[in-house]
Length: 194
Image 1: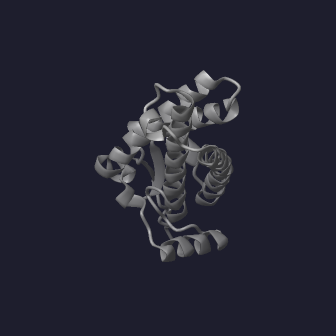
Image 2 (image 1 turned 135 degrees about the vertical axis):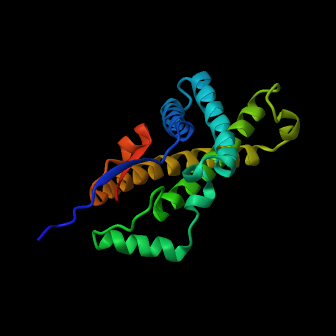
């Protein structure tokens, strides 16, 4: 009796722009988070790069390659629950690109990073009369400044915690899928059974 073994084939899933975006975003967020007020100029530079990367990603999420588009990993609540159940059974559902839980995490991280960078620009505008939104922020009372500052810090901490969840999720999915997803985000290739 001959057994039919499925072969593994590599498929390009993540285009170079998505991979560069991912790792540059991770490096800049980490840099800005660690530096905080210690080295304000580097914090501002890293934060500015994050904002530029977000603008790129929002555009690329609409017009980019198949698995980079938001429509590829937008999913329903039911799909997320089904995927979580498949993980609990230790047999994850198959997804060429992002899983439903991965897609939710991406939307959450991108939204959080947008709030973080916009609040950072607003704070900088309050402190520097030549900053982009200084005219808009002129006359803002102390309570509003404090609220923006607290929002900026809270979102930064929530994002740092979310990044840890993201890393844990990648490790769990890698183990269950028997595939190195970190390597896939470096090389762009995922292995699939054919």
